Length: 149
Image 1 (cartoon, rainbow, N blue to C red):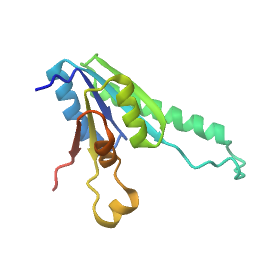
Image 2: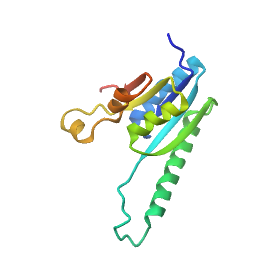
Image 3: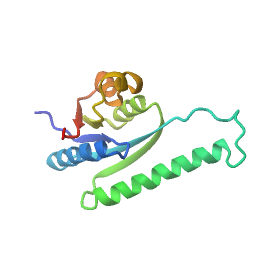
């Protein structure tokens, strides 16, 4: 089997991502791999033309970025206390495109991503970031779904 020396984990900080992270960390430990944890801030709609007196678009963007950094720091503190071979990336854009781009930039040998397992109309409306990553990634993708209860 191919050695996964660089593993990338995409997270949206949901329960699904937390569950998938356990797989990513187990594989990183097994292969003594560098683990890159990526969170993509979905680009918000451009609100610059809308008058919102309490906050500017730039302030909103800054708050969103700071919130993502804080969530990533908390995530790493809680999940990676005893694993030091990792780095984090926070990107803005279309999630599946950024995940693939970051995997290419880091030379990831494997992407691990959680999936919500949406079906039917919900899948049609919201789509699936995991499915798009699987279809377009240049390396293997492990898609992990929460167990069905």
